[in-house]
Length: 255
Length: 327
Ligand SMILES: Nc1ncnc2c1ncn2[C@@H]1O[C@H](COP(=O)(O)OP(=O)(O)OP(=O)(O)O)[C@@H](O)[C@H]1O
Ligand SMILES: [Mg+2]
Figure 1 (tube, rainbow over the protein chains, first blue to last red):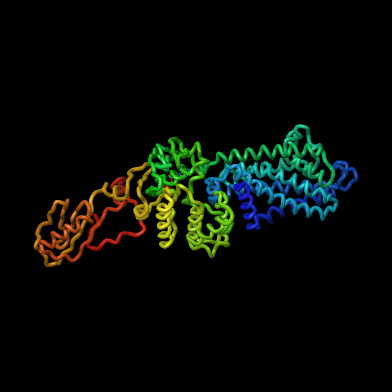
Figure 2 (figure 1 turned 90 degrees about the vertical axis):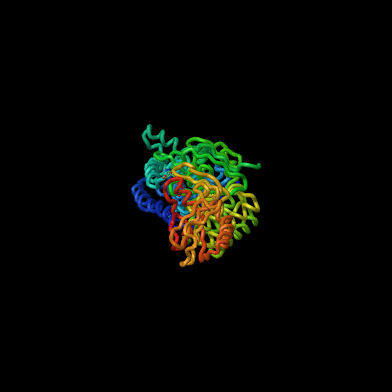
C-alpha cells in the first residue's frame, strides 16, 4: 500500500503548492457556465424546452454536466504532470524505486482524481447557488460518480503521456479528444437527440454514464438505471486503470 | 551472497543512430568501489541506466545483486540506490517532502524515517532549509539534497553517476569520506562514474576506462598507471656542481638524462622505493642536491596513451615545479 498512499500524498501536496493550476481548472468551467450556460438557458425559456431536458430548466440540466466537464479537464492534467516529471527527472526517481509500479501509478491516478473531484465540488457549489434546484442528498453519490470518472481519464491521460515526451503532442491529442467526449457524453444535450451512428460513440463514452448518474443523484433525471451507470462506468475505469498499470510496467526512460 | 555484486556480459545499447554502449563486460565484487572513468558521451550514464533497470539493453545480459536486470527488474530495484547525473527532484515540493516521499517509496516508515531524514539533511547541511521548496534551491543545494536522498535507505549496491559535479570542496570531501565509510562498515558495493581522475584514484578499488562505448582498460589505479610505465625523479643540483659529467647509474634506474646542467631526470619503476637508494648514491658521491621532486603518471596519461586523446577534467591541476618540462 505504501506506493499507493505515497503517490496520493505527493500529487495532492504538489497541487496545494501550485495555486495557478488550481485557478486555471476552476476558471475554465465557470467561463463555460457563464457564457454558454446562461446564454442558452435564456434561449430554452419556452415551455417545450423542459420536455427535452427531462423537465428541468436548462441551467439545472447543465449543472451535472459542468461538474463532469471540470473533472474531465482536470483529470487530463494528470497526464501533463507525467510529462512534466519526465522533463524534470522526477519520473526516473519513481521508476527506479522498489515500490510496486502498479501501486505507484494507481496512487498517482487516484491522487489526481481526488484533486479533480475537489474541483468538481467547487463547480457544484457554484451551480447550487445559481440554480438552487440541486438535491443536496445527491452530492455524495454524484461525487462518487465523479471519482470513478476521474479514474477513467487520469488513467487514460497517463497511458498517453507515458508514451510521449512533448507537452505540445500531449496537448494536441487531448484537445482532439475533449470535444467529442464532451459533446457526445450528454453534457450539453441529451444523447437521444443525436443521429444513430453517433449514438454508438456516446454509448461507449464513459462521460455518458457519469453524467447520467450524476444527473440522477443531483436532479432525479436520468436515462439509464443508476446501477447500469455504476456498472459500466466502473468497468471502463477498471479497463483504463489496467492499461495505465501495464504501460507503466513497461516504461523505460528511452523516449 | 558472496562474490559478484554486478556482472555485465557483452551489453550493447543502441539508440536510433548511436551505439552508446558497445559490447561492455565487467564484474564488480561485493563491497568493492568500482569506477567508470571516461569523457563525455563515453556511455557511462547509459551503462548505469541499464544496470538500474531504467533502460533495456539491445543485447547482452547484466546481473545486479544476483538478479537479471531485465527479467527480474523488480528484485533488482529492491537492492539498489542511485544518484542520477541529471536532476531528479520534485522542485514544487519541500526538501523534507522530497526525502519523505523517497523514504516511503523505499519502504521506510514512521519515526525511523523521520529521524533518518533529519540525519541525512544534517549530513549535507540542509537542515535549515528543510521546509523550503526545492525550486528556490541553488544548483549545489539540489545536488546535496539528491545525495542525501539516495543515502536515506541503505541499498546493497549504490550507483553514483558523477556524484560530485557541482559540489563545493568540503561537501565533496564529506561524500568521499561517506563512501569509504559505508563501504567499510556495511560492505556496500559502490559503482560510480566520474571524469575526475583524482576522484577515481581517491575512491575506487578498481577503475574501468570507458571510451566510445567500450572499456579500454580495467584495473586498480596503480595497475592502470603501470600500463604507461614508470615514474620520474627530478634532481636539482647546486649551480656550480659539475662532478658528474654524465649520469647516475644503478640497477633500479631505467633511464637517466641531464635535462639542464643542474637538472637530472631519472626514470624508475617505483619512485617510492627508488628514492632512498638514490639518496644513498648521492651521499656516497657527496653531491649537493638542492631540490628533489618526482612525478607519477596520472590516469590522464593512461587515458592519452590508450585513446590518443586527453581526459581533461581534474579537480586540482597538477602544480609542477616550473623548471620541469612535461613529458
Ligand atoms: N535517450 C537517448 N537517445 C539517444 N541517444 C542517447 C540517449 N541517451 C544517450 N544517448 C547517446 O549515447 C551516448 C552516450 O551517452 P551517455 O549519457 O551514456 O554518456 P556519458 O558517458 O554519461 O557522458 P557524460 O560524461 O557527458 O555524462 C551519447 O552519444 C549520447 O548522445
Ligand atoms: Mg553521464
